[in-house]
Image (cartoon, rainbow over the protein chains, first blue to last red):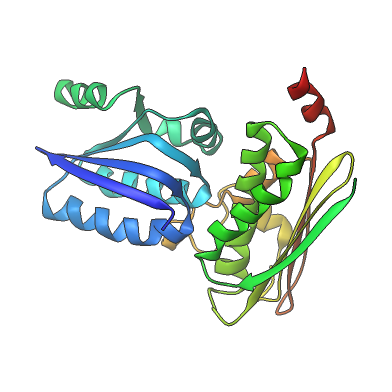
Length: 116
Length: 147
């Protein structure tokens, strides 16, 4: 696969670090894995660290909207950190920035959740 | 300085990555700015994903064709499938429209193709297939990067 995924759970936050390329070949499987974890560990906040993500297309957008819908039912939210300019362009173009919070680091994302 | 390649690969979703990689490799000689290459990569990804998921309905015995070429001014990207075709191309091009929204599709494929290229032409006929042609001008960009 063209992607490497690292996940960690702290309290009700699921951290997902994506390295490589996020496209349709990946989102199908990733969707199942993350959905299961959200249900199993009662996750409310999803933090995507995209520092090492160097490609994403509209399949990735659909995937994030799907997780947003899932977390919204739990009153949770999605926080995205460390985007590179190309990914940020896709975020702007697709309107994803309106439904996700954006921070520069994972730590900042975690703090944001604690304040909420 | 015309160059052209024609490729054909099975309608397997793994081949989207392959198509992007071929695209990037084909353009290497033009020495284009990273941003330009990334946009080409993105539109190839969108068009090939559409051809596989919507055109061929992920039927892995079908083939998708990708023809790439460039002249002194433009890069040409052509993605062809002989799948189910698009009933209403104008509707399909609308932002957020998708026939498969329940599968978490964003409905942004054509929008991204339109924004990232200079010309998008979609020809489709039901049960015959779809041909997407994208033209992206590079000559000015290349000059800028050399400054």
